[in-house]
Image 1 (tube, one colour):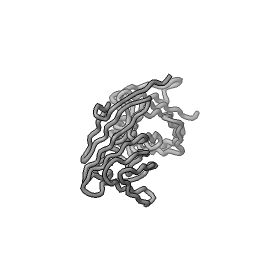
Image 2: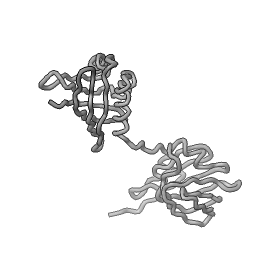
Image 3: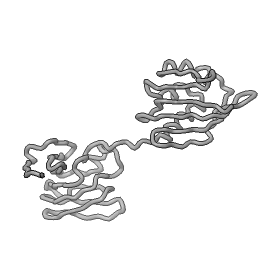
Image 4: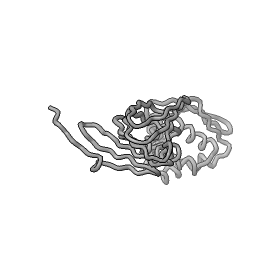
Length: 234
């Protein structure tokens, strides 16, 4: 049974300060409500964008405007100015700034929880593997090793039947050094596809007098290769 609760922004659970403003967050009834305070001169694209690391504000808002005038420009080019007594519903994708010399205060019921925080970086496992493959094809061992985790596991294609396992950059360097030193060898990625953090890449590896085809099964963690399991045809 839900019980009555009372909270105050005077004793906020969290206060996030940023240039020309702050976000005061209280937690109540299993949710979060924010009071956003913007001083004259505040603009999202100048003062919060470096924190959020996004091109525009991706936090949706459902807010009551208590004080000041706030101009808002949506990514589609539409604009509005919110004044005291207004209620606004803003989808993701906008800029905003204080109009005039008075501070802006809003109470936000929907978008304050992650406001003025770094948004999670969207993982792109295929891009990581493509960068890894490009460094391999260029015989750039240092760049290739920079793209593996400290506990990376590499299972080589040989010797049969299971291949040799190397763990960590030092062991992997020793396993790969002779491959990278052979400047006549050519690595070509033929197809790459992903399922979550696992990536499968079909490849062709050729050298003077021959070639092999195979696949690598990668696991990506924190934008680096944490596992590379290699298999060859035949």
